[in-house]
Length: 221
Image 1 (cartoon, rainbow, N blue to C red):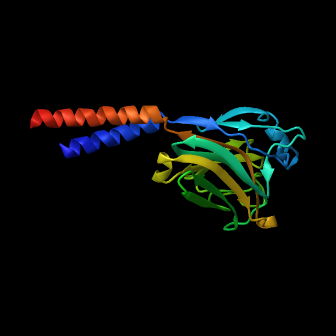
Image 2 (cartoon, rainbow, N blue to C red):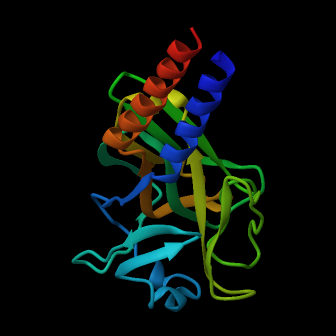
Image 3 (cartoon, rainbow, N blue to C red):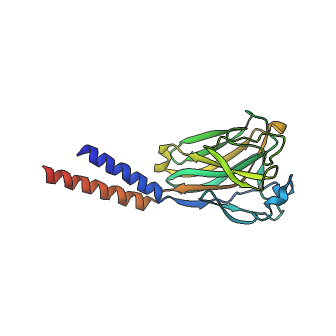
């Protein structure tokens, strides 16, 4: 009986994950217009607007000064959403040398948990332009999102699977930080989105499975 209840709870978790809802975040500040960079005109059709890459919606914005991304500094992106299980970003760099640690993305929860992932050239981040600098990503937690073609501009999508503790607290903010490495890589972020399991849905599913398991056990007794 215990094994069947455990299996049912695992199924509940899978169903809850399938019901996860996306929230596209607003970057509080922009300081660069990547449309003016090498082959940047390829981005013209993306900004401003909601674009979906690999099934994930992103809000791509243009501010009053015509900026489209936040580049080579530090920014805290407000989230304030309960139960976030995954986060997604559009991050690339200007320039880039394989293996260089060019910054990090950090997640802060309401229970004090902090989860940090380094941005490493050639692994989860690369130059925005398919040219002389770093051109590889690992294809696991960083995948192509937009490409204008070989030898052209591109955007990549990072996938962050947050530790289990974040499912039971509010994700307060996401910090994007650049180590300002110059030609080794200057990262920029163009958008961020989070996925959370709606609390009422998760609780209802858990309660239904638990009640069913208890009833089954009573019938067996």
